[in-house]
Amino acid sequence: MHKTTARSPVNSQPQQATVVSASGVAGDDREFLFTDQDFERIRKLIYERAGISLSPIKRDMVYSRVARRLRATGLRSFTAYLSLLEQGDPVEMEAFTNSLTTNLTSFFREEHHFPMLKEHLRPRMKKGAVTIWCSASSTGEEPYSIAMTVAELYGGIPNNVKILASDLDTNVLDKARQGVYPLDRVSKIPEDMLRKYFMRGSGAQDGFVRVRPELQAMLSFRQINLLDTSWPMRGPFDAIFCRNVMIYFDKPTQHGILEKFVPLLTEDGVLFAGHSESFHHAADLFKLRNKTVYELAEPAKKRAHRSEGR
Ligand SMILES: C[S@@+](CC[C@H](N)C(=O)[O-])C[C@H]1O[C@@H](n2cnc3c(N)ncnc32)[C@H](O)[C@@H]1O
Image (cartoon, rainbow, N blue to C red):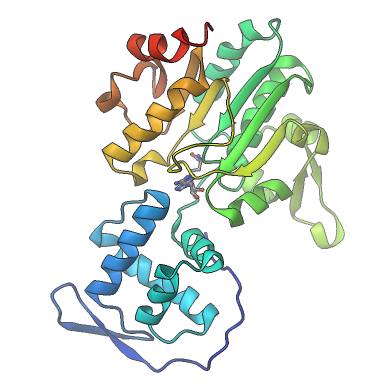
């Protein structure tokens, strides 16, 4: 996905510069000088801000994404740009963060989770309200897939099921809110569901579909940083989706987030993880129920729910 966050250039084009490689040897000619020190400063900033651990192999990717921010701000060196961030410019910090997140997603990604969600929710249908948190929702394909699964289970759009979709990246949240996708993004959705839950665009919108407002009504969107020490909602959620984001975090960061999930889940709530994510290191908090689906471990369940009498 291309990352483009606009900000008017204020200066003219910078001179060509030389990249200094990890060994300190001059490498390819590039537009801006990019030193080991610059890379380390970026690693520190994004780790502190988003929890994202950037490995040295991401160096070229980091250069090209952050270089776009230099062009957008009109700054002529990484040093100047990083000083701006370190001084705490909130607007640029948001754009910088957005530029370094990876937002790959798709409708019904890891499709085995959706029948599992259905079976998890089925006994809850008669009990009343159901709440689900999709905690790294990217451009919206994941929370809309959850919403379609719910609607299929209930045989219509229920008014007592709420889905919170959140992400740190404000650009992807805007796209998710719009709910407009090119046809090739929805090609794997069965035709009958496409007709039920999307409207086809015409004229300027030809080649696009838009999520129907009735389905959208189940969702609310909010910027939430998983790294924050406190989150704005109390829960409890019947299910939390936290898929394909923990891979960017180190184990202590993952553990801290999992700890905060515990009191936000109902006692029998489930946590959906991504295909390459495993929480064995947090066996005190979560235990595997099924393929990449977790439930609260006994000690965590007792600790979280004893005081509230749930
Ligand atoms: C690879 S996408 C995964 C999207 C979706 N969950 C899926 O599995 O298809 C990772 C998402 O995590 C978000 N993200 C990264 N760091 C985050 C943080 N600290 N808090 C919340 N979201 C974060 C990114 O912005 C990105 O949209």
